[in-house]
Length: 184
Image 1 (tube, rainbow, N blue to C red):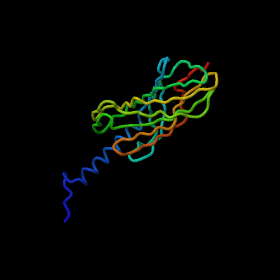
Image 2: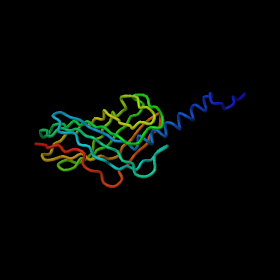
Image 3: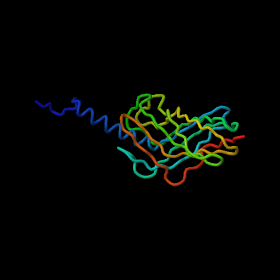
Image 4: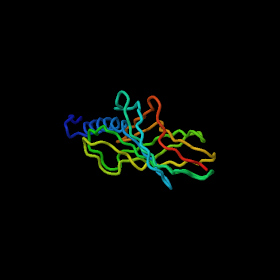
């Protein structure tokens, strides 16, 4: 015996949640990120263009405001701890409970260092009402810096997870340096 597809059936509820999750992931994919550390320099905020793929991903280039807080300097051979926040001007189409959205962002090292680190732990610490912009905070990364000189951190691939949907965003064009750490 089948149950008619009424507004109260589990199948319809699941489809609505999936559609809402895809729409929210698309909005979050157009958002921004921040990193933090000990003795911190002023936080640097840069705008980065991203092209995103995945269920419900927005078309075209989306701008994310990426804010990175990093130490002004560290001794050679020590670790630079970064704190990251990501924001977007796009508004979410549904209410998002606190902690429902998470993300990661890769950073390319340049200058005196090479390689990459990934900031993880991003989330929305407070509920986001429908029609409001999105900010994900709490992103953190650490990089051991062995070479003297200025090391730069440039935003790379970003991934957002919300309501079981994952959207991956690649930098469109060239991303600006988000933080510089002087290694002495």
